[in-house]
Amino acid sequence: MSQPDLPRAGVAATGVLILAGTPIGRPEDASPRLARELAEADVVAAEDTRRLRRLTSDLGVELTGRVVSYFEGNEHLRTQALVDALLAGERVVLVTDAGMPSVSDPGYRLVAAAVEQGVRVTSLPGPSAVLTALAVSGLPVDRFCFEGFLPRKGGERSRRLASVAREERTLVFFEAPHRTAAALAALAEAFGPERRAVVCRELTKTHEEVRRGTLAELAAWADDGVRGEVTLVVEGAAPPEAVTDPVALAALVEVEESTGVPRKQAIAEVAKRSGVPKRLVYDAVHRP
View (tube, rainbow, N blue to C red):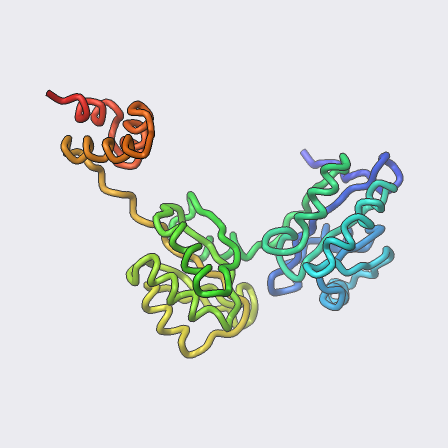
Protein backbone atom coordinates (compact mmCIF):
# COMPACT_ATOMS: atom_id res chain seq x y z
CA MET A 1 0.00 0.00 0.00
CA SER A 2 1.40 3.41 -0.93
CA GLN A 3 2.03 5.88 1.86
CA PRO A 4 0.44 9.33 1.81
CA ASP A 5 2.70 12.31 1.26
CA LEU A 6 3.79 14.30 4.27
CA PRO A 7 1.59 17.32 5.04
CA ARG A 8 2.57 20.45 3.15
CA ALA A 9 3.67 23.61 4.89
CA GLY A 10 0.86 25.39 6.66
CA VAL A 11 -1.31 22.29 7.11
CA ALA A 12 0.22 21.19 10.40
CA ALA A 13 0.84 23.33 13.46
CA THR A 14 4.56 22.93 12.86
CA GLY A 15 6.57 22.16 9.78
CA VAL A 16 8.64 19.09 9.05
CA LEU A 17 12.37 18.50 8.85
CA ILE A 18 13.37 16.19 6.00
CA LEU A 19 16.85 14.66 6.02
CA ALA A 20 17.44 14.09 2.33
CA GLY A 21 20.02 11.64 1.06
CA THR A 22 21.90 12.90 -2.00
CA PRO A 23 23.99 10.96 -4.55
CA ILE A 24 27.50 9.98 -3.46
CA GLY A 25 28.64 10.04 -7.08
CA ARG A 26 26.35 10.05 -10.08
CA PRO A 27 23.47 12.58 -10.14
CA GLU A 28 21.24 9.99 -11.86
CA ASP A 29 21.19 8.04 -8.58
CA ALA A 30 18.93 10.76 -7.15
CA SER A 31 15.33 9.72 -6.62
CA PRO A 32 12.34 11.52 -8.20
CA ARG A 33 11.17 12.32 -4.68
CA LEU A 34 14.42 14.16 -3.92
CA ALA A 35 13.85 16.39 -6.94
CA ARG A 36 10.26 17.08 -5.87
CA GLU A 37 11.13 17.83 -2.25
CA LEU A 38 13.90 20.23 -3.25
CA ALA A 39 11.55 22.04 -5.63
CA GLU A 40 8.76 22.36 -3.06
CA ALA A 41 10.78 23.08 0.11
CA ASP A 42 10.24 26.34 1.94
CA VAL A 43 13.87 26.17 3.07
CA VAL A 44 16.78 24.10 1.79
CA ALA A 45 19.69 23.94 4.23
CA ALA A 46 22.81 22.76 2.39
CA GLU A 47 26.32 21.91 3.53
CA ASP A 48 27.64 23.54 0.35
CA THR A 49 25.23 25.77 -1.57
CA ARG A 50 27.39 25.58 -4.71
CA ARG A 51 27.15 21.80 -4.78
CA LEU A 52 23.42 22.09 -4.21
CA ARG A 53 23.12 24.37 -7.25
CA ARG A 54 25.07 21.88 -9.37
CA LEU A 55 22.84 19.04 -8.22
CA THR A 56 19.61 20.91 -8.89
CA SER A 57 20.95 21.92 -12.32
CA ASP A 58 21.72 18.26 -13.11
CA LEU A 59 18.23 17.28 -11.92
CA GLY A 60 16.48 20.10 -13.77
CA VAL A 61 15.04 21.42 -10.51
CA GLU A 62 14.19 25.05 -9.86
CA LEU A 63 14.45 25.99 -6.20
CA THR A 64 11.54 28.15 -5.05
CA GLY A 65 12.35 28.28 -1.34
CA ARG A 66 15.13 29.97 0.58
CA VAL A 67 18.60 28.41 0.41
CA VAL A 68 20.84 28.67 3.47
CA SER A 69 24.27 27.23 4.17
CA TYR A 70 24.47 24.79 7.04
CA PHE A 71 27.90 23.29 7.66
CA GLU A 72 30.14 22.34 10.57
CA GLY A 73 31.42 25.88 11.04
CA ASN A 74 28.00 27.53 11.40
CA GLU A 75 25.75 24.77 12.77
CA HIS A 76 25.60 26.32 16.22
CA LEU A 77 24.60 29.69 14.72
CA ARG A 78 22.06 28.51 12.14
CA THR A 79 20.27 25.76 14.09
CA GLN A 80 17.92 28.02 16.05
CA ALA A 81 16.86 29.96 12.94
CA LEU A 82 15.96 26.70 11.20
CA VAL A 83 14.05 25.49 14.25
CA ASP A 84 12.14 28.78 14.26
CA ALA A 85 11.24 28.18 10.60
CA LEU A 86 9.99 24.70 11.47
CA LEU A 87 7.93 26.03 14.36
CA ALA A 88 6.43 28.57 11.97
CA GLY A 89 5.13 25.68 9.85
CA GLU A 90 7.78 25.63 7.15
CA ARG A 91 9.08 22.57 5.35
CA VAL A 92 12.87 22.35 5.72
CA VAL A 93 14.98 19.99 3.62
CA LEU A 94 18.52 19.32 4.85
CA VAL A 95 21.15 18.06 2.40
CA THR A 96 24.88 17.50 2.67
CA ASP A 97 27.52 17.21 -0.03
CA ALA A 98 26.83 13.49 -0.46
CA GLY A 99 24.95 10.74 1.33
CA MET A 100 22.78 11.01 4.42
CA PRO A 101 22.83 14.12 6.63
CA SER A 102 24.12 13.66 10.20
CA VAL A 103 26.19 10.55 9.30
CA SER A 104 29.66 12.11 9.76
CA ASP A 105 28.05 15.22 8.30
CA PRO A 106 26.08 18.21 9.61
CA GLY A 107 22.60 17.46 10.88
CA TYR A 108 22.72 16.00 14.38
CA ARG A 109 22.35 19.35 16.16
CA LEU A 110 19.36 20.32 14.04
CA VAL A 111 17.66 16.96 14.49
CA ALA A 112 18.16 17.06 18.26
CA ALA A 113 16.84 20.64 18.49
CA ALA A 114 13.82 19.85 16.31
CA VAL A 115 12.95 16.75 18.33
CA GLU A 116 13.21 18.74 21.55
CA GLN A 117 10.65 21.21 20.18
CA GLY A 118 8.26 18.45 19.11
CA VAL A 119 8.86 18.98 15.38
CA ARG A 120 8.37 16.05 13.08
CA VAL A 121 11.63 14.70 11.64
CA THR A 122 11.68 12.26 8.76
CA SER A 123 14.11 10.94 6.19
CA LEU A 124 14.15 10.88 2.44
CA PRO A 125 16.38 7.79 2.06
CA GLY A 126 19.18 7.82 -0.44
CA PRO A 127 22.71 6.63 -1.17
CA SER A 128 25.09 5.90 1.70
CA ALA A 129 28.83 5.36 1.37
CA VAL A 130 28.77 3.19 4.50
CA LEU A 131 26.22 0.70 3.17
CA THR A 132 27.56 0.79 -0.38
CA ALA A 133 31.09 -0.04 0.81
CA LEU A 134 29.81 -2.84 3.02
CA ALA A 135 27.77 -4.33 0.20
CA VAL A 136 30.69 -4.52 -2.25
CA SER A 137 33.40 -5.39 0.29
CA GLY A 138 32.97 -9.14 0.34
CA LEU A 139 33.41 -9.10 4.13
CA PRO A 140 30.69 -10.24 6.59
CA VAL A 141 27.91 -7.64 6.78
CA ASP A 142 25.39 -9.32 9.08
CA ARG A 143 26.86 -7.30 11.96
CA PHE A 144 28.91 -4.13 11.57
CA CYS A 145 29.81 -0.88 13.30
CA PHE A 146 30.60 2.53 11.85
CA GLU A 147 33.53 4.44 13.37
CA GLY A 148 33.45 7.54 11.17
CA PHE A 149 36.73 9.43 10.68
CA LEU A 150 39.75 8.40 12.72
CA PRO A 151 41.52 11.12 14.76
CA ARG A 152 44.15 13.02 12.80
CA LYS A 153 46.83 12.90 15.49
CA GLY A 154 48.80 9.68 15.68
CA GLY A 155 48.49 9.17 19.44
CA GLU A 156 44.73 9.72 19.50
CA ARG A 157 44.32 7.48 16.44
CA SER A 158 46.29 4.68 18.10
CA ARG A 159 44.18 4.89 21.25
CA ARG A 160 40.94 4.80 19.24
CA LEU A 161 42.09 1.74 17.29
CA ALA A 162 43.26 -0.03 20.44
CA SER A 163 39.76 0.40 21.88
CA VAL A 164 38.18 -1.46 18.93
CA ALA A 165 40.95 -3.94 18.09
CA ARG A 166 38.97 -6.85 19.57
CA GLU A 167 35.65 -5.78 18.00
CA GLU A 168 34.22 -8.86 16.27
CA ARG A 169 31.88 -6.96 13.94
CA THR A 170 33.04 -5.65 10.57
CA LEU A 171 34.24 -2.05 10.97
CA VAL A 172 33.72 0.87 8.58
CA PHE A 173 35.80 4.04 8.59
CA PHE A 174 35.82 7.22 6.50
CA GLU A 175 39.23 8.64 5.65
CA ALA A 176 40.71 11.56 3.77
CA PRO A 177 42.82 10.49 0.77
CA HIS A 178 46.02 12.13 2.06
CA ARG A 179 45.69 10.29 5.40
CA THR A 180 44.71 6.87 4.00
CA ALA A 181 48.24 5.42 3.98
CA ALA A 182 48.84 6.46 7.60
CA ALA A 183 45.44 5.13 8.65
CA LEU A 184 46.06 1.73 7.03
CA ALA A 185 49.51 1.50 8.63
CA ALA A 186 47.99 2.30 12.03
CA LEU A 187 45.25 -0.27 11.47
CA ALA A 188 47.84 -2.91 10.57
CA GLU A 189 49.76 -2.15 13.76
CA ALA A 190 46.67 -2.21 15.99
CA PHE A 191 44.76 -5.10 14.38
CA GLY A 192 47.61 -7.16 12.96
CA PRO A 193 49.00 -7.06 9.41
CA GLU A 194 47.02 -10.09 8.21
CA ARG A 195 43.55 -8.71 9.03
CA ARG A 196 41.51 -8.51 5.82
CA ALA A 197 40.31 -5.11 4.64
CA VAL A 198 38.90 -3.27 1.64
CA VAL A 199 39.59 0.24 0.37
CA CYS A 200 36.61 1.69 -1.50
CA ARG A 201 37.58 4.75 -3.49
CA GLU A 202 35.29 7.06 -5.48
CA LEU A 203 32.26 4.81 -4.96
CA THR A 204 29.68 4.95 -7.81
CA LYS A 205 31.83 7.47 -9.71
CA THR A 206 33.59 7.03 -13.06
CA HIS A 207 36.91 6.06 -11.46
CA GLU A 208 35.47 3.79 -8.76
CA GLU A 209 38.04 1.40 -7.30
CA VAL A 210 37.51 -1.40 -4.78
CA ARG A 211 40.83 -2.84 -3.62
CA ARG A 212 40.90 -5.89 -1.33
CA GLY A 213 43.78 -7.39 0.63
CA THR A 214 45.39 -7.60 4.04
CA LEU A 215 46.00 -4.42 6.00
CA ALA A 216 49.73 -4.77 5.33
CA GLU A 217 49.17 -5.15 1.59
CA LEU A 218 46.80 -2.20 1.43
CA ALA A 219 49.11 0.01 3.50
CA ALA A 220 51.94 -0.71 1.05
CA TRP A 221 49.66 0.05 -1.90
CA ALA A 222 48.52 3.35 -0.37
CA ASP A 223 52.11 4.55 0.05
CA ASP A 224 52.05 5.54 -3.63
CA GLY A 225 49.24 8.02 -2.91
CA VAL A 226 45.46 7.81 -2.88
CA ARG A 227 42.98 10.15 -4.52
CA GLY A 228 39.26 10.68 -4.11
CA GLU A 229 36.71 9.91 -1.42
CA VAL A 230 37.75 6.87 0.66
CA THR A 231 35.78 4.39 2.75
CA LEU A 232 37.63 1.62 4.59
CA VAL A 233 35.99 -1.69 5.50
CA VAL A 234 37.92 -3.89 7.93
CA GLU A 235 37.25 -7.47 8.99
CA GLY A 236 36.27 -7.92 12.63
CA ALA A 237 38.46 -9.74 15.12
CA ALA A 238 38.21 -13.50 15.44
CA PRO A 239 36.21 -14.62 18.50
CA PRO A 240 38.44 -15.54 21.45
CA GLU A 241 39.10 -19.22 21.95
CA ALA A 242 37.08 -20.71 24.78
CA VAL A 243 39.00 -21.26 28.03
CA THR A 244 37.93 -24.55 29.60
CA ASP A 245 40.80 -25.44 31.91
CA PRO A 246 39.42 -25.27 35.49
CA VAL A 247 42.68 -23.94 36.94
CA ALA A 248 42.80 -21.12 34.36
CA LEU A 249 39.15 -20.24 34.91
CA ALA A 250 39.58 -20.11 38.67
CA ALA A 251 42.63 -17.88 38.26
CA LEU A 252 40.66 -15.46 36.05
CA VAL A 253 37.91 -15.23 38.68
CA GLU A 254 40.54 -14.56 41.34
CA VAL A 255 41.90 -11.68 39.27
CA GLU A 256 38.42 -10.18 38.96
CA GLU A 257 37.78 -10.53 42.70
CA SER A 258 41.07 -8.82 43.48
CA THR A 259 39.65 -5.63 41.97
CA GLY A 260 36.68 -5.68 44.34
CA VAL A 261 34.17 -7.40 42.07
CA PRO A 262 31.80 -9.74 43.95
CA ARG A 263 32.37 -13.43 43.21
CA LYS A 264 29.01 -13.94 41.49
CA GLN A 265 29.67 -11.06 39.14
CA ALA A 266 33.28 -12.19 38.62
CA ILE A 267 32.10 -15.65 37.58
CA ALA A 268 29.61 -14.14 35.12
CA GLU A 269 32.27 -11.85 33.62
CA VAL A 270 34.80 -14.66 33.21
CA ALA A 271 32.20 -16.94 31.65
CA LYS A 272 31.25 -14.24 29.15
CA ARG A 273 34.85 -13.44 28.17
CA SER A 274 35.88 -17.10 28.05
CA GLY A 275 32.90 -18.24 26.02
CA VAL A 276 31.83 -20.95 28.45
CA PRO A 277 28.72 -21.56 30.61
CA LYS A 278 28.66 -19.93 34.03
CA ARG A 279 28.20 -23.35 35.63
CA LEU A 280 31.59 -24.44 34.28
CA VAL A 281 33.28 -21.40 35.86
CA TYR A 282 31.36 -21.89 39.12
CA ASP A 283 32.49 -25.52 39.34
CA ALA A 284 36.09 -24.49 38.64
CA VAL A 285 36.04 -22.00 41.50
CA HIS A 286 34.41 -24.42 43.93
CA ARG A 287 36.27 -27.56 42.90
CA PRO A 288 37.55 -29.70 45.84
